[in-house]
Amino acid sequence: MSFELPQSNVMEKEKPNQHSKIDKVVAIMSGKGGVGKSSVTALMAIALRNQGFKVGILDADITGPSIPKIFGLDGRRSEYSQKGIKPIETKRGIKVISINVLLEDEEAPVIWRAPLVTQTIKQFFTEVAWEELDYLLIDLPPGTGDVPLTIMQSIPLDGIVVVSSPQDLVRLIVKKSINMSNKMNIPVLGLVENMSYFRCPDNGKKYDIFGEGKVEKAANEMGLNLLGKLPIDPEFVKLSDSGNIEDYPYKNAEFDAIFGDRIVEVIGGLE
Image 1: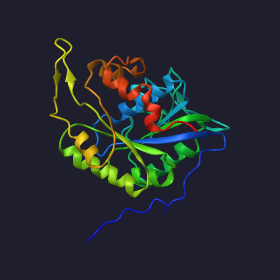
Image 2: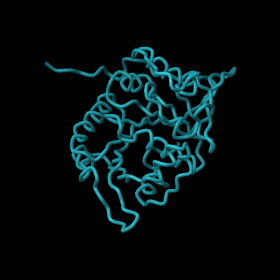
Image 3: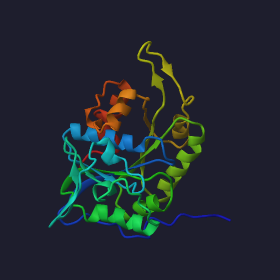
């Protein structure tokens, strides 16, 4: 018995509302939860914004949204205007839409079936007044299930960045994500190995806490770029927990290598 994914042309691609113009749409994907996908999404957005681009984040993880928290948007609520739903702006001007900026009680669980979740995400793309954006980053929920599938089918993605952790088991999960993207005819722009190592601040020694990374091998096997290996950095965790991720200094060479000037090259320059 063989299983086939639905073809990418099953659904007509959605369009932003008439008051929005979005040049590039990039999704950030992980095969499993807990690998720091939202953190990578945030760092990409900050790096692009620091270069002067107009950037938005669509938090598509409806049941586990974390983007508002790490940007310090707790307690803020989106409003409606004649142009559509107004996204919340971070202190440095990144536009964000998430279920948590729409709910009255951000701690209330979202107990929805998949059709309602996917419809909400489509509305985030079509009914939000994004206005002009150079880049819209979509923080996908983990896995290869109904929600990522619907987004790949219905939203015009220019590419996908896959995030993973170093463990050997992840190689299989990464390959599932990449194979799904290939089935949907969406280019995989590269892989990021997150939580790759810890560098001791006292002696500078590097420790592979989760073992030697396996993502680079998976990337080589599939002919993809490993964009970089991100370390475990307690300062980054502290700033994310306090909602001040935009204050994170790119003092680490690995962070700067991925999220410096190269990020535009990685996800596609504007035409």
